[in-house]
Image (cartoon, rainbow, N blue to C red; front, side):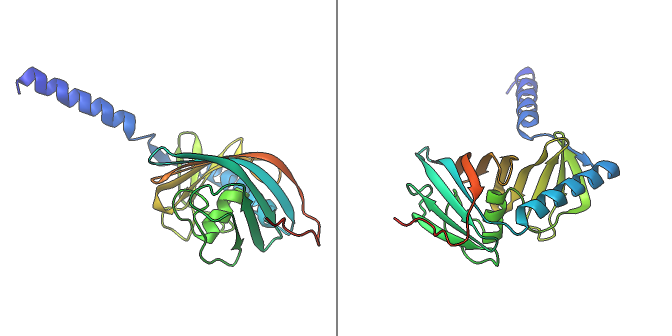
Amino acid sequence: MRFPAAVAAVALLTAVACRTVGPAAVPADPALTVSALSTAIAARDEAWGPRRFKALFRGEVSSKAGFTVRGYLALFWDGEQLSWRVSVPLAGSPRSGTVRRSGGEVGELFPGRLAAADLLAVLLGIPEELPSGEGAVMRAGRIELNLPSGDGRAVLVSNPGGVTGLLLPGGVRVELSPGTGVPRRIELRSPQGRALLTLESYGGWPEGEEVPKG
């Protein structure tokens, strides 16, 4: 390769690398970190406090191979257990299931497998686990707060805006549009594909009302 061509190739590779690395992270200002922690704790207390609700999301799941499935996801939360039903299997999952607050295995409701705690964090909009301010960074205008459980877990806080993202194990990234009760919009991306949920309805789930069957 001639010298001018080699220089041009290096320049091209450098430009591509700069475009694909993503925004750089810088240590977060302590005052902003405290504010972000306060925002995350308030959101966590609201999401995980005693309550019963039912919600309906319109869902779309795309696999890495390009196959797309659309349907509806219904949620029923009693404060300890989340029951869910889908109109069609969204990501190879069964048509219904439960996720317990105490943990355990869950099916593939989204592309890739998530632990029970991580799945609940996605659907409720924030993990039950309290984030830490230690090692907090600012990236693309958001404070990234790590979770003590590790494995890459973090909460992304916008100011203003609240909790607007999650980082989860296995290269899973979640973008959230906060709402009353549950997020208005949830977009999850993983190496296995993408899922998009848009809230259709949300309300209280009265005691004694059973989860619909069929």
